[in-house]
Length: 374
Image: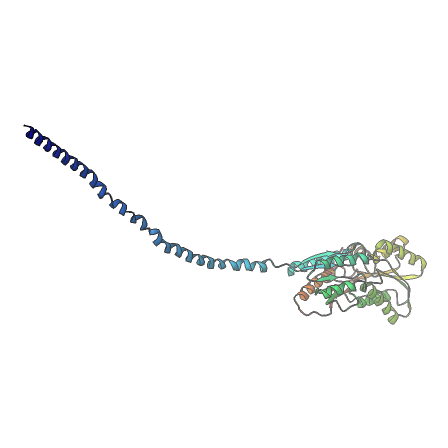
């Protein structure tokens, strides 16, 4: 009995051991089969990113193409300097600004600037006696380093040092109306004032019968126009009309009030006076004022240029006639010559802008009217 119980217990123990063994083996197997999950790690190492690197390199190689494409825009930027090239600047400095003559010259200068595509400024002293003021204007103009300079000199000598500075700086200088005593000027656009004043002398001699006393008022004795008009008139009288006496020559600075006082003094000092010549607009207005105030409308009066008072006097018979220049043409030609000088084109030393005699018979003619101003 005891042996049977022992055998039964032994069998139960063996069954329990077998059961435990079976349970333990079933739990361990899945852990061993799970190992391949660890082997799946290479999937993280199979990084297409490394293979994608050539695409990045391709992008980097493509960049130069964009950089090379950039110059296609560059020419537009390089072309800008030509489009933005500075317009040539030409200061035009006259002898004065108070007479309508200079306003006509200004109009001609501005027309030339518009036609030729340049920039100008036009200025002059308040009075034609202000030589120092004109020197200051020229000095200020040269400080702006202009492309060229146009000048009507009040003093034919005083401006030379400044014009030498311009020449040394390579700035071409063009004279107009009144030049200087120097070869610095590339050219001068002006009236032949010696010949024009000579014509005035011929007309005066004709109208007073070739004999008698004549007086003269000139704007100055320093400018080329003042000198040439005075000498042209006096020399023609001396060489061609020995019976005509020049009793006085005075200088009114182009100012009509001062010229009026001078003319009155001359008329009062010479009661036998037969003729009076005024060598510019301001001078002749002074003569006309004196003649009117003193009641001497018997005098033969000859003038220069135009202006409303002078035109009215010629139409009324108070003034016999006058020499007209071409003020608009003078202004135009000086700027035109400056542009030619800037461009290196050849120029004659003198540009003759012409002159004409006019009186009541032709003052309204097609030839004369465009040359007159009010």
